[in-house]
Amino acid sequence: MAWSRAEIELLAKQMAAKPAGFRVSARTAPLVIEALAYFAREGMADRSLGYRVDLWTADQASILEAVATANHLNVGRAAYLAAVETWPGQPLTFRKAAWILEASKQRS
Image 1: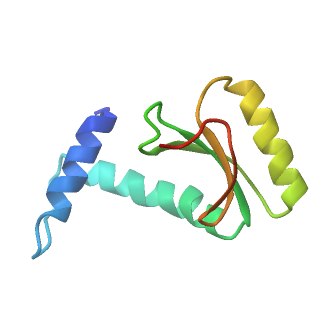
Image 2: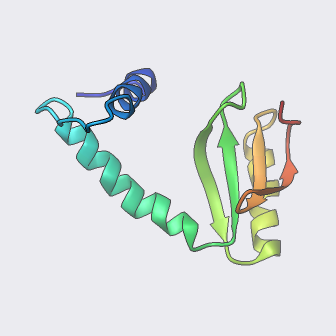
Image 3: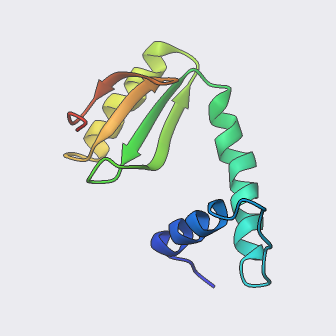
């Protein structure tokens, strides 16, 4: 079954709202497994690299995708500039950890 982003966000809020924990149903188990595998593959890898380029939602409320990661400042900035050309007009950030080094649109 394909899940929409809104369905996944709602499910995450429902799970987070249960202080005693939650059970994973047969319906949600494949999604949880996929999410954990994605995090292990993508999320953990991003933590070891110093610089990251993120593509944000139009309202800049959340990250749609980490489009590039790099260990070197100049490589990361080159990836950021390429992303700006690839996604013109879209909100992008180039950052190191929590510090935003450049942004294609002013964040609100």
